[in-house]
Image (cartoon, rainbow, N blue to C red; front, side, top):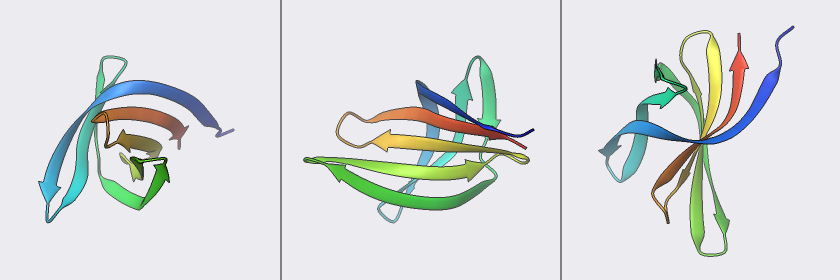
Length: 83
């Protein structure tokens, strides 16, 4: 049975900046590197003056939700779904 795992851990992300957009290319979690194959959905949310970007990405059969805190320049792995 496939389930969504709530994680909420800070991670390191390799990104590209193109035309005023941040694009995650790869990330590391638990000493494993994941390459982003597809960015499936992106949305932004404000909490006060802080802006957060939410990226739903896939690395093949696995899906993840990454959060980018623009104020602190921090990335978090929020959720994982293993296909």
